Amino acid sequence: MSDAENLVEVGPASEFEDGDAEIVQVGRAEVGVIRAEGEFYAIRNQCPHDGGPVCKGNVQKELVGEFKGTGKRVDQQYSDTDIISCPWHGWSFELETGIHIGDDRIRVPTYDVVVDDGIVYVDSGD
Ligand code: FES
Image 1: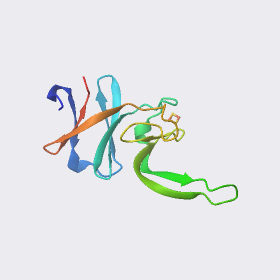
Image 2: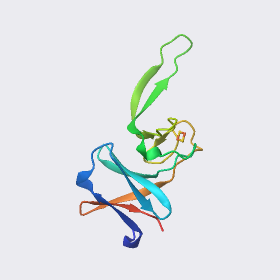
Image 3: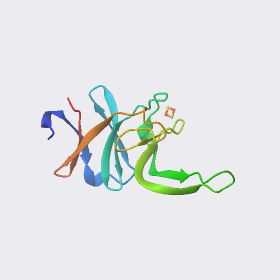
Image 4: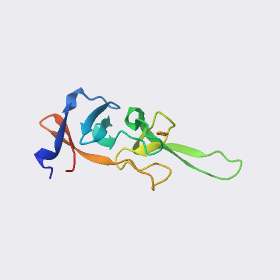
């Protein structure tokens, strides 16, 4: 359960469209609150690659493929995982976990999001 003192107000949930990102200050960190498929996510707006504004990137489903062998067509499809791609060099992260899609050792910090009475909040976790 979130402690109300830890909540940072973002704004009315009704003003978010899918793919929208609202940047708020949470302590000393800039955090992007992003809506995808009706769900809210919050990740730090600082890419672990070179500090880029990852929350300003595109939100999409992860494209996954299966290598079938040399000379064969790769079998590609979109998964159910929502990701965001950093606008600077394209590193991509799962919105829910902040984990890089190609290397689970790399991660952007994530935050809990609370929607209460139609208002979106980020839990600073303090
Ligand atoms: S700074 Fe984000 S991919 Fe390079």
